[in-house]
Length: 256
Length: 264
Image 1 (cartoon, each protein chain N blue to C red):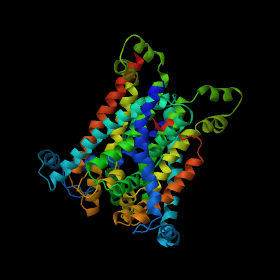
Image 2 (cartoon, each protein chain N blue to C red; image 1 turned 135 degrees about the vertical axis):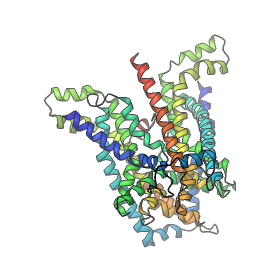
Image 3 (cartoon, each protein chain N blue to C red; image 1 turned 60 degrees about the vertical axis):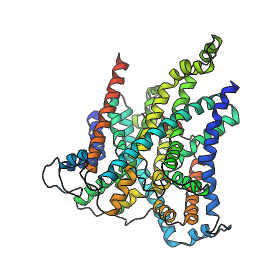
Image 4 (tube, rainbow over the protein chains, first blue to last red; image 1 turned 120 degrees about the horizontal axis):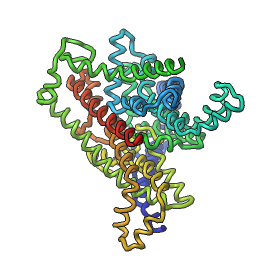
């Protein structure tokens, strides 16, 4: 028994080297100037940089709107897919995740092109639509997973005890499906804040999101400021994960 | 009535989800350079793709090769590392187990850009020149957690005594591993492998930050550079259409087969 627990050791070393150390290095570089001296100027630069701040605010706003949109569209979809009286085919579920296997950048370019063809100017509206389109499967799948595994007797019991259909949904089904919603939110919110290519394509470079600024700084050798911006994102990730008891890993696993 | 409404809703969402893909597929049958330009039916783009007679064909072909090779190597290593790790984590207890599970969750919670930037800084810090090796290491990093997550449930479903029984009956630890443990874990390993492979194929941000400046391109970075230059290589349209059809066929085959074995 004790012997086989040592099998975790190689992966532990791997995780320390390729996950923990890189994250520590973000902090390390964020608190340095380009000649390697300790400084807080990268952090203060962000809080005094009007452009960076407004991009940050816009990114959070777009990510919030996208997440809400994904829940509003994705929840009913997952609900119908998981309801045996409405859908009995596993193939239908596969159809909803299949688009993810086509290169995301290619799909995004095609979406932008469709908008242009329809005479719709690329801007915030198209950005939201395209983001929602890209991330919708990530919302549908975890919710579907939880709903499909849910014990139906709870809902039936509520019904037998005289609850109306909407009451059954609001008081039983919805609360029980929250772990799926939460892991869906995790898979949509932070990735939306941090995308760079997708937002560039969908708005013809008109709207920058936070990911784009990080990428520009890193690519222009401004590693320290880039690291500081990444650090700010890490802090937000830390806060959002802290408020989430279940890490949603169960719903995220086994996505096939 | 409820059923009709539900059906209509699903079909509507599906139409939106598939519109860009159908759009690419339709416009792969015309010769025009830009995506939404129809200049009559033609199979020329397919012909160019297969005969390699297009602008920068070497670049596109090597991007496809790199994408497949990196995905294959990364997911093989991720599957091995993740399976061994899952066996170890399963046998750990208390705080050690929690720590491992916490660490394993980090790459899954981190958005791509954080994984990419942090690994970029690691390679810069350690003075490792970036190229194939660093991209593969980065892909193993974000793939392995999903293997661990797929293998762990198989371990908890397994009867713990059968491994010990094999040892008692004279099997060497390696034989017991190969004949007892691996068959039980195989479904988890396979789904972990497939998940890793597809995530590696689709990755853009992590590759973008860890590929260095040696001109290494995967399909994603190729498309990104191409689109930023303004003109998308027209042959990408037939390529994407073919990839999509292959995946569609494979997934439908797997699902129809598993549905059949279930009903039997």
